[in-house]
Image (cartoon, rainbow over all chains, first blue to last red; front, side, top):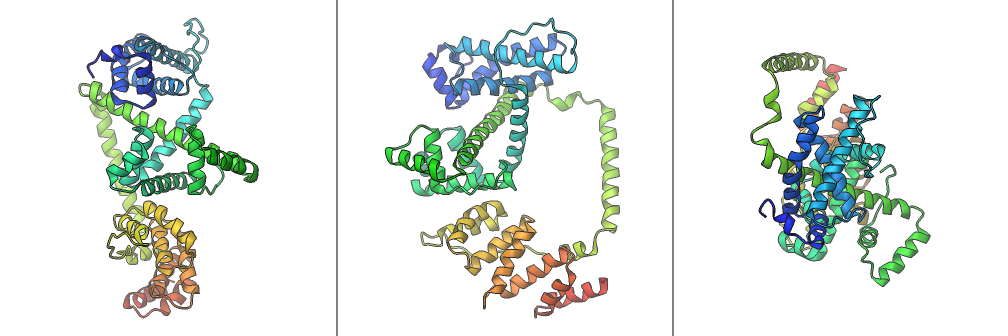
Length: 185
Length: 245
């Protein structure tokens, strides 16, 4: 997808793209908004590494809000604006919490993002999950990625691994159980 | 994920269908029954929901990292900004660490040293991937031989539930647990084999069980098992333990 063709998507296509984690939608949005967030953060006492971390956290929040139906972007511009706003709020929260505790004049525009404590817990959980996921064998990693991230149906999954649909279902269960056991051990 | 919940494949399917809003009328009934009958049901639903959502978030996060690398990182890698002196300090620290490691090695627990000297991974069985009943076992064996012990256990654990006394299965579940350093589980698996009247894995189970006892400092039990084995390595190890103690 050319850089600006995300702007051609209808609202429905955009939301479907987000719900199905389409790489092209994800990457167009990233490439379009990150430079703006980066320059905002650099102008406001931050550096490029911080911009990257804040932006990726914000991206995840914004992405989840759309999936959960809590934010319905009218079009790509609205989605870009939302992503920028969530990033900006996160950066302002960070500044307030660590370096500008007394200062309250920066004036964040109020868009509800996930509660800070909840996000911290999510971050912890994702780190733990990442370590557990790395311990799975390659075929389990691939299977779970295709199903839960690429949203491939079980039938297609079975086809691509040369399994029956029943085996695909069983193997998906086993891989998830394996992941759960590593986390709980 | 605080409680060790057992979720069966059927329950898993039911929960996922509920989360995807795709329950058939039969499944809907089953779901309602589970809500009434299983006191852990709400916890199970929450566990599957959280795991699914977190897994998707993790995979999105990983993808974002890739997108960033491809689009922006080529010209500005993070490490390029470290001044040279940091590398010098890092190199010195690495040297100190290596020296410390070597030093520690000299004082390593003698039982641990013996365990490491004698322990060798079981090579596993030859598998002929087939469509027979042993298909899942064979798949697990392929994983086992590739060092994917967690995966092998994921395939074998359900088989063991169906057939808890199958000695071949018990033995390799024990071996996979041993590789994963789940010593207690491995010990229990191997003890079960030895509690049966006879098994072709008896000798091997004794050998590995002796090694676990050795590692855990339970020397009397280790010696007892080793003295019951004919293989020369067992006698050699027994002599070495006796020398050390």
